[in-house]
Length: 149
Length: 84
Image 1 (cartoon, rainbow over the protein chains, first blue to last red):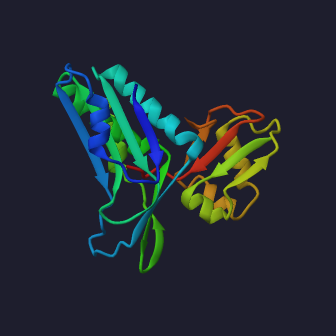
Image 2 (cartoon, rainbow over the protein chains, first blue to last red):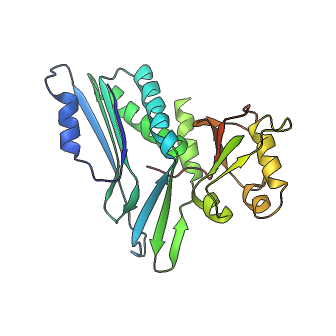
Image 3 (cartoon, rainbow over the protein chains, first blue to last red):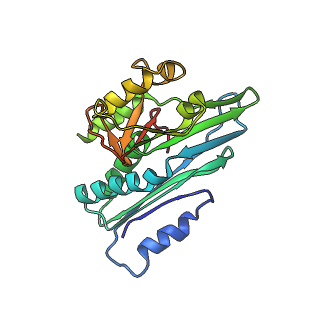
């Protein structure tokens, strides 16, 4: 069963990977992607606040995961996304994919991240000395989707 | 009634996160709802006008301008998402 969670608290990647792999001998590949809060080039980021649409978020993530599981040979998937106020270098998101083979695990992991970034209802707001401002969506994230068509 | 939600920068620009709009016959889809909201003038005209790139959902599913809506639906408008 895939794990999808939206939470304010930090996550323990090792514990999540351990849950997905415990007692199994058929897994040949585990891919973990972790997204972090990156400081601004001027090192002025004080905090980053993630807002989301609670009623929709987990549903949207579930759908992305289900599509990935239909498309690739996966044993399991975990997606954890944090919301609320985060500091530079904090973990934001974790995607774990397990499979018999690395190609499926790698590709499904990237697919899930590409769709998460363009379809799941999260919004980032950066706070600096100058105040708060909402991060603008990037066209390159939309373009990244076209390779999965 | 249609339950309309706003998120992120759109919520801040409008100063509200939700409102209820009477589901009358002219509001049949997401595009028509957006036009109806804009027709009330400011601040909606600036924030929800066609010059703004926005996404929408109906009952927590991503929607398009031609997605049908009916009484009791939850419709959300929000800026392009930036998670991950």
